[in-house]
Image (tube, rainbow, N blue to C red; front, top):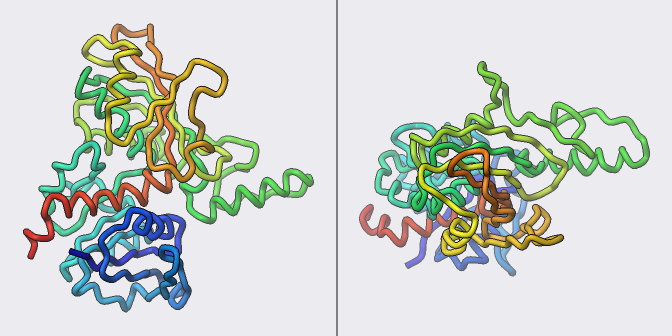
Length: 341
């Protein structure tokens, strides 16, 4: 059986990655539409090795008869058009932040909480934040075995998390820095080239940024509401790939060796943890890869049952496009469309 799939936001970095991922995974498609804003309508995007899709105008697009909508057009756009698509019978998998914390919208990472898909009520499923996805993939098997009490995470997030404009700004600033030309930040609050910025998204009343808040509340919704989470999110001058330094306190005794074994057996994870020069994964190493990579696993001696590790993933793949496609694959495996019919 094949499905009619609409990719909304198809001209953006994530939208193009979704199209690429669908083709690479041989997703069962009978028809596919590339959909974006009116200003992008008429442009062409690639799908697979031989197909070129003409972009259709989202404002005029009729979702009737389409099975799956993979959305990544921006939160304000999804707020309007995702419910419209769902009302037409198209199940929406939305990559924006708009629906994530709504109680009747499942927030899903298939390796972590596929059971949440049984709670679809509005025809909309939310894809979590990119930095949250890779962290909960790593935390899930450890939580099942050792019971997590508290997580402290510092992220090192690439500029592609801010979209194509963020990537363009890093490239432009890097060139200007090398010739000592003037730099005026546009997409970021300070110069990003050859710098790091401890600020992603808006500041909130308690001093946290919204990106940090997302990691806290999304982890609780996906994994366990009793886990305490403290996050510091930092933008770094890397084009693709998010890295995280994660420190975890458990209720049960844990060793680095036991944690390493648990993580090696977990879905979606590759452990590369050699205690030698280069025996770890960096953002550059993970580009284009589907896995969440774990390195630098070691005991934290400052608490009774503590562990630290380094977590890296391609934020455009597992942090966005791949996770959305995996949700669609899980819906098919769970018989969702047969039930809906």
